[in-house]
Length: 159
Image 1 (cartoon, rainbow, N blue to C red):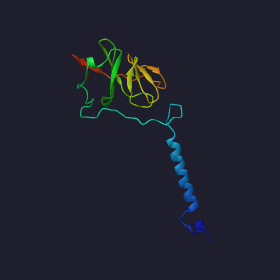
Image 2: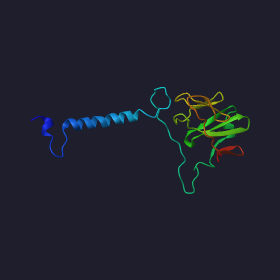
Image 3: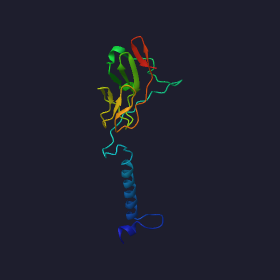
Image 4: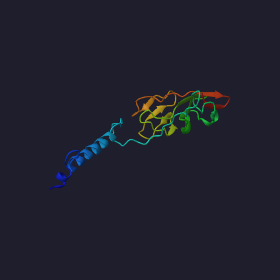
């Protein structure tokens, strides 16, 4: 009697059928893991950091109202990234401050620097305008969403 025959009978599967089924499940898992990269360059997705406000009774962002920086900390024609709060604050023109999400719209990496009039994501090379968050360099196809900030004297905080 072969090993396959020894395992067959009412209510049992052959070893071959069991191994074939396990192989199919493994292959399906591998194929499922290959989906979801919208970059089109075949590169492996980059690990991301998700930044979202912590829920609290009454809703809202727990960082709202707490000072992020002084106006003098934000260079004219540049900006500063506040990764823990998930916001980038820019000063495109003297005295004009803007807030944007610090999460790149391409694959949710946290943006890395503000330089040369753009907010740059070094994960895949996307660049966004410091004026309105619009895409200046793909692969991102959507602008950075605005974040509301407020000025109180020389203090900048999330609204």
